[in-house]
Amino acid sequence: MQLPAPIEAYFTAVAPQDGDTLAAAFAPDAIVHDEGHGHHGPQAIRDWWLAAKAKYRHNAEPMAVAEAEGKIVVKANVTGDFPGSPAVLTFAFGMTDNRISDLRIG
Image (cartoon, rainbow, N blue to C red; front, side, top):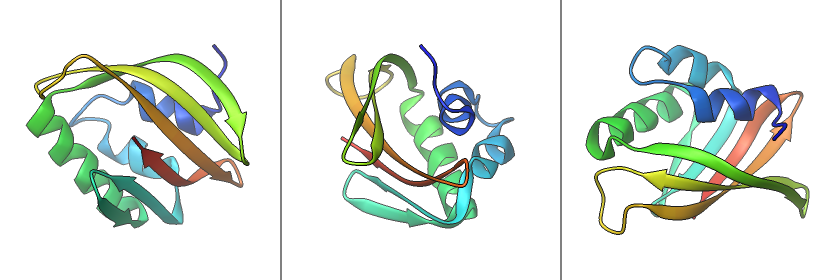
């Protein structure tokens, strides 16, 4: 499956050592929507990602990719320390200038 480089970086980053690599995949004004909260900017996104990785020790394995409503939508099998694991989640990425401008996880 072919994913744009920033999205590939999102799914292959390993916590905690790849926190800066993950943050660099996001545009300066990017936002991530997850679990009812918004995380604005690469530093806040990095902090959110590191905290989520520490809490849930999860891994997301992309299964399918499509384009819908101007977004790159990835369905991924997510496993980790959370109720309902494993679960198939949808990651809807907006892209601007080869960086992630927004991400909605659900």
